Length: 376
Image (cartoon, rainbow, N blue to C red):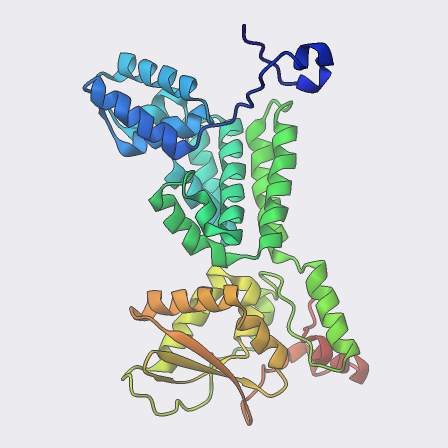
């Protein structure tokens, strides 16, 4: 006979010693989708690949559940099944929609993210299921950042391509923070009559979290001060009010472009890059304002920094930021670029905020040390 249990440690040793143990596990999503396609071929059904993956995701690793869902779809939709049929019958949200939703959160687009959430709610989607899908998507994004090949059996080729675009948008610790926040919100939603309200609050808090400076960044700046090194600008996203930005207008660069053999205007391209960064990744905006385009040679795009901004240059030259900037350059100019960073003399630094001119000497010294500004 078969004895099934989720707590084998509670069974007496006299029973365990007479049993042959088999530990069951969830079946990979891609394997379930392939098996569903095989069943559809034998039964002469037309099952779209996206529909098979949607069923596999909904089955959550259970082949029997996936087959039951396929039977229901045949009863409701006939012999031709598309992804939209799966989403409508079971109330799921498409993987593309979840990717778009998370992308808006990562880019800090609060209004657009809430609008998409409202659209899904009006369409009758289950808010608990959408929250679970969001957490699962962030988990997959986290795994992709650590080891891209680990999702070869779980995510489709299209989904992994989206992961490759979104992974450079934020660091691993930020993804962990988002997962923790959404998981906590999911726990509250289970007992709340208005689940959409808690979901909206979670989205707003998540975006605000991306705006904040992490403890590691604060410690890094303090260590730099102790060692007598220049302190990089705070990396909190959205730092600096619009009023303060208006008080100190600054062009992306005031230096003359060096001769380049690519026949392009590096100042124009870099200006478009800076404009995009302010909306798509504003937490590095204060750093990017210290960069000056020096020229282009071959596929190299050269950026210069003032001598006292070495730490800013090191932050921007990290793998994640470099890949993001190179991808943005390719998107704007239509060609591949490799960024080159260097420290240069006689490059102008960031203009001081207008309100700091009348501040006491000790305040001005602190503003210069921490690359800050006075807000009112």
